[in-house]
Image 1 (tube, rainbow, N blue to C red):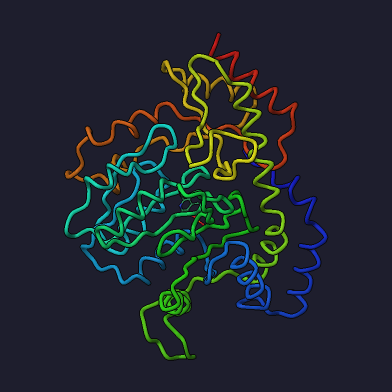
Image 2 (image 1 turned 90 degrees about the vertical axis):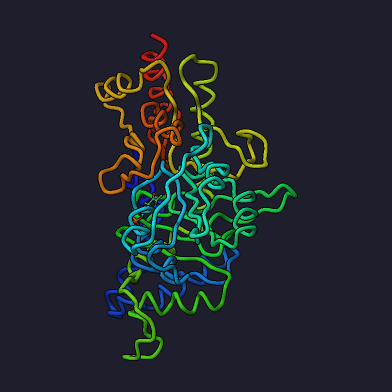
Length: 379
Ligand SMILES: *Cc1c(COP(=O)(O)O)cnc(C)c1O
């Protein structure tokens, strides 16, 4: 699904030198590499504060802790996402409220959010699934109207731009009150271990978050708030510093591969290609709203599982993200939920299949993959 080896070849010297320096200096935690990465990422994203932390799940949890959400507060998020999003809501004893998604973008349905708002609702967590921003303009408007926080789960969309209706662009993860991302190795900006970060333009919130990641300490052994231990280590920061200058190029390569896939599948009955639905037009050559963390097809006519088996036989990697709606997972099932409210997610879990997507895909690979898919679906 990903080819990290090919990408490593392009940054090998820089990463090797930086890691050797860290080993010499023994500054493994909170070293200069972490501070430099933080500043470089702030600059790239155009955001005032980046707070590095241990992983993307922690980033979401710390964001919610920083906003002072309390047990019983309702937090609305998408039914169709990775479990980390809802896991931290439940872990903090907040009440997760799962809602349906749009069939074309796979992202949270704004009218479903609106229907789910109650007097106890405190926050919305849009997930920018597969590399494309949720419908943030409408979500921000709704949040403002109801006095809600917006916490972006940007684990899959770092580098994506969101285009507002007036043409203004802003980086994914910097649109809400706070954004969380992951540097898990297979993410678009991946470390060589775990890592994550929180973004915000709010100075007071940034201060709180910096304390929470470090045991609630602002001054050594003075614990002002309840915190956690969640740090990005210097070696991961060095890897991320080597990759950050190439992130736009990595995103371009993913988009180019997505365009080739979609061109090959054009007009094939039973295959629905992923759509970009931001305020830029279609999958255009210059579109920067989607960074294709995943390239995800919908396969109709009940053929998805057969296609998965066929790809397996032909040694082509694939992923089913995600096979079970969160509201049907044992840990998150709840009598409150009504199946009629999840018609899209319930259908998507039977239709989606993600194809190999990374920065090193070449034309021969794409050709082989698309021919193999088409041969099965059209055959
Ligand atoms: C990967 C991911 C996370 C969690 O990130 P980790 O660094 O693995 O903890 C959270 N949300 C989404 C949508 C993800 O894809």
